Image (cartoon, rainbow over all chains, first blue to last red; front, top):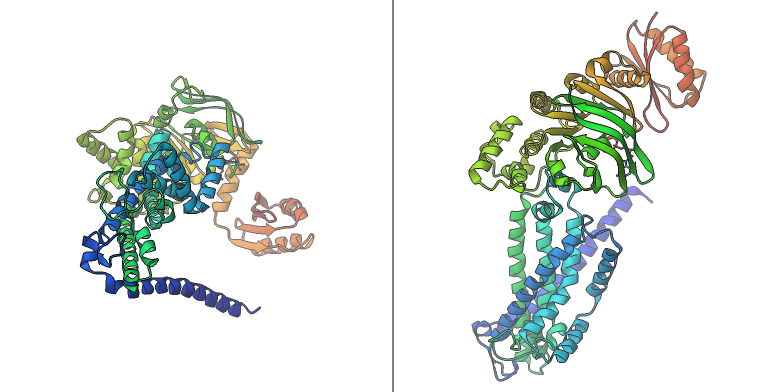
Length: 282
Length: 330
Ligand SMILES: Nc1ncnc2c1ncn2[C@@H]1O[C@H](COP(=O)(O)OP(=O)(O)OP(=O)(O)O)[C@@H](O)[C@H]1O
Ligand SMILES: [Mg+2]
């Protein structure tokens, strides 16, 4: 085949797939804004629902916003505390080359692909056994489990990319493994670690199935970590399921709020990443 | 002359491959020792044994003893971090840490317990000055080290290594990634530093070895071929292989006056072409021949010598090609 033609064909294919991705993304966002923006009033984000389970067409979804933020940030912090040491210990300087590490990676990959309803069902059974009610705590724990494989595996990938010369430089200065890991590896991998956390956060805040039975749903704000909490994904789910167009519009407004939260976090983390970037060795 | 490092019967393996074969040699204190030898002869491996960096390589094994200040570095029970602190390493490619210029130099002292800000400031200034970098960076100590030029980065690595107050400086081809001016800079610093430190430098560049070294170790395929003072080894090598290596490298660096590519030709044609090429040259000029015919590699030099020319070197340059250097005589 003619080289020039090949080149052209390839370019067209690339542009087409790019257009498909951007186009569908744009459409999702457009539908949400189109349907949700008119219903997005000030009272939506400042009041709790009136008339039971969002059916009243009155009040707002403050309970779901607060609940989702608690759930997402709580589980993100918990998952980060567990994931970072786990990912660091999967370096070849520690257990990375062992058989155990192989099986850990394998199980994490399987868990990554496991549907979130399975996490929810599992969490529900454990909570029943322990005599726990659906609660903020339960939701946070299940969401943590949901996020762990994503965080650990994606952190591990960026940690693996840290050039061995950098570690060697630290070792030759008389640093221990631990000092090298905290002083050099984490610094170099920091922007990637931020991205990994963001990726996991996105999955955590958007997931409905895993918290359906574990975090529960309610019209009021949580007063303790053992109270059930509402959440945005479930608010969308319930409101969209009603036969009333006004309530359905409020579902889109809730989705829009969810989108804005994720957007805000993306922008902040990008700005953070940029600050960490400046010292990175390429 | 007192030895600072005594290497005794050191063998090193990467899996099945033996990279160092029974090396026994001493490295004199407060002098510059150059380790020379062709690519793959085990120079870097030897350096990595000194500071046990070889421990980080999967499947690498080392036996024998390396005695530094009465302590066997290869002994499994010693504190590796202490051994490494005593030896600064200047790598082939500068490898600044992902932090500011200041923090790069302060990294080592901080590890070893200096937390006092004022003391750190002094240390950083002192060693940046010794490495000849202070004037260029004193106004931007907080800026990232990766913004420095390659030559500056290498001097930063030198300062960083010196800041942990080692007794020995190991350099693995420290100037091969640098431009001539930066290389000269590093060489000058090393010459100054040898009053206070024992320096070991691996180099491919014979001229650099001649400029810097007091003592020379020649390795070939993992074996110790020759060692001695720079004078002995460069002026009057005991081993033919050393002479060939020194001459060979010197010739490739030498300006050739004419080059003839005889690839694809077979004997006796390449023989004839070589003769013709030499015929057109003046006496004393150097001709470089490139051949890929195995017979020519042996027959052409032999024939040219029979004609009274001087064959300076015969070297394989890649899988198929050989380079023959001939000086015209008669
Ligand atoms: N990590 C490794 N695994 C396996 N073999 C290795 C490894 N590192 C080096 N070797 C082999 O050991 C031998 C010595 O290597 P070494 O790096 O010490 O050579 P060198 O003299 O420093 O060469 P150069 O001048 O090219 O840097 C070579 O044959 C090389 O292929
Ligand atoms: Mg080497």
